[in-house]
Image (cartoon, rainbow, N blue to C red):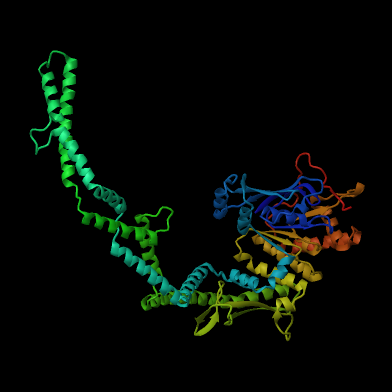
Length: 611
């Protein structure tokens, strides 16, 4: 529930703080005084489009602040915290919207900067605004279907999920069948590539190993001579015992010479130990060099085999690896991806049969849910028609009757088709039904779609009757109506006020109106006006104030007669007395005498006249 609305620099309103509360709040004022700025401020506060033209002339920016008590609406608290904000005292939300004269817009949620879209998400939970444009929307089939679904409690999400799954499966099946030849060619190419790779059977790291082996085999003779020569120098040639003295013999003799002086000097003992280690290392190296020379293979056939294997691997790399650095590992990755793709594009009869079965199952699920929704709509249509017709009778449309027609969609090329109850029907994401509101103004007259058979005033009353009937099914705690009583007068205007008062028993209701008959039912009456002398010096000013007692009677008199005359005041007092005695006007509001507060240093609202 909205507790307070603060507006600064918006239109003709300079600064005003408007206390709100439960029940019915009415906003009235002369044409052009700026009463719609209250609704404009609410729309901005809840994510409406920012328009720099709304910023008051001479002001740098317009701002709207709102304080709301959100109670136990858990989703609101979660969204606020997700946006970085906090609730005050656990259940109070502060929102702020700023629009600069340059057109830039900023939003704050629970004290934290947030995207404007977050305000719109919160609006879905907290506020419903209805204006004269809603009368135009009411004639659209989608809006009529949505209204019936609200009344019936239809949850479209399960069907929408099933519908999306069915359409995805159908699209895949159609694509598979339509591209069968192309997919078969792709399948053949993939299968050929996989078979070629598998026939070579490359191993990770094999190319590097083969490169090293090929280099060794290509230089086998030179490597053998070098290894043998080094071996002979270190440990001698076993085939020539009379050859030169080898390194190990020299190192052994030097070590034995030092060993004769062991114990005489520690430093020399250390050198002797190192010499002994060096002799052992030379012997080990000689042995390893001999082994290396013995295992070298200078067989040309083996080298040819290795080079052939390398060529086969290089062919695979050129054909199947398109990575920046082509490698055998890239070829193996291509093969893995190809196997997955081949499984996905299986165009065999078995694969098509399985895909067709999956599509049929998804279609059956969608058809079942669509049928359930149709049944819900069918059951609720008559009840909604009766309820709205009853409300219309109270809104001075005694003989009028609303009919709610629910018919299955015709089969067209523009929509997919399902079979429901043995009949083919066109299906969309909102189900299988077309919903049409028909208005019969009096018995014997044809029932015509509301867009063709209803005047503006009748549309206003149909919409209000719908809102009264749907109030229990709408989760938002606050309704705002912007001159939805346009085109209504006389007894019908009184009935509009009575219905709004009844709606205000269940929800907080804010109404911008020009009808005294509606304003008389208010728990709180707010006036937006231009005080005397406000236009001096080419400047227009507007104030926002709550009126009570005699001031309220004076405002109702102005609304009735255009001026505050004794006769008009008498009529206004009579309206108030009748409204107060009406059971629909019983209110839970303790007092309606709360004054409008202005922030410290507030000035009278001013804006310059055009020109």
